Amino acid sequence: MVNTVIIFLMFALLIAFILMNIPVAFAFYFTAILFALMFWGWQGIFTVLGAAWSMMMNWVMVAVPLFVFMAALLEKGGVAEDIFVGLSKLVGTVRGSLAVVAVLFGYVFGAMSGAIAGSIAAAALLIYPSMIKQGYDKYLSIGAILGGGILPQIVPPSINMIIYGSEVGVSVAKLFRGGLGAGTLMALLYATYILIWSNRHKDRVPVAGRGMPLSEKLSAIKDLAPPLVIIIGVLGSIFLGLATPTEAAGVGAFLSFLFLVARRRFTLKGMKESLITTLKITALVGWTISGGRAFSMVFDVIGGRTIVEQILLSLPAARITALALSLVLLFILGMLVDNISIIVIMGPILGPIMVKLGYDPYWWGVVFCSMLQTAFLTPPVGFGLYFFKGAVPKVSMEDIIKASIPFTILTALAVVLLLLIPQYLTWFIG
Image (tube, one colour):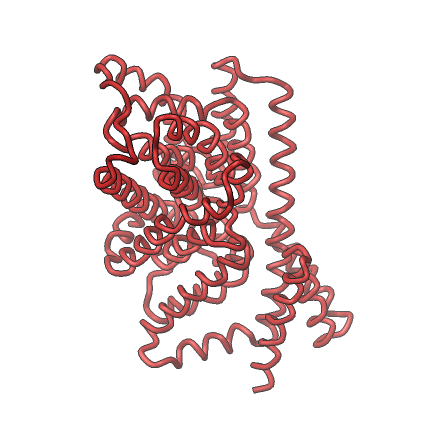
């Protein structure tokens, strides 16, 4: 009973620090240090520092700055425009085609870089003005960009999955395979919804212009070839077992550099900005993960994981109720805390429990990361909402939140389908 109260107090203190607007990484550290001092005195500081050191020595995490650098290079090199033009030619002029392009744009951009901020911002700047100009419904336009924009966090090379694999100790390559299946399912649900909604509201979604001749559609190959080469180079090397995710990240960064040079888009200014972006994001991720590691280590040593495990395993019909409760908890946490923090804290706790309940660790890992997709669309934290607002300031936050609701529901529906048809994911995972 005493230990249960202490565990509750530890989480309560962490949440209190976060509500005081202390950065999450430092909230983790402060909580870990206070409880380490409480239990072990000054020796507890070495426990906290040891956790941070273990993160810095993790080879898998080297993939994070490499993928971030790759995304930054591609963003500075104007690859977003190439993808938009190529997809527009391929999709054609069916009713709602631009909204479908917005979803596919996020899917392809995600398969290249895993960068949600770049995906949403690029789509908001490139596609949203075209949709409004052609008379598309405002909410459908925003929602399609948000739905497609969050796909980079589930479609490989997903930064979330790299962190999850590192924290839980499972193969990132297998998570990537499952993420490809989950991301494809979400993209199909989004596109299907858009086409059905567009045909039911023809007065709010126009048919875009004239049809394109075959020659113009074939010219899309020129626009999409470089992105596809990068995608195949990165994911192909991982799925074929030719490279680890970290090595593939290096391949992707190198191919992105070659792409910029070949297209004569390489500039020293762009390289400098890409490096600065990489340093900032890597520092943010590194501090958050190391702080989360410190929190988790103290939490484990004082018996927190054992207590949570006992509670969940003792529930009636635990295999179903523990799974449902865990997903609801992830959804609620997603509204309050950033994804990386949730993965670092909840991943190592829930992962082993789900294995004890008889679930495949990779299936659960993909479901876990899929559920976190909703976190980008749900206020007050919902980063996807703020990325769009930052790119298009004239759109009110109220409109952005309203537009995100159907796609939040569709994302949750995708998770339900993954639960009901586990064979779908396990086929991708292999």
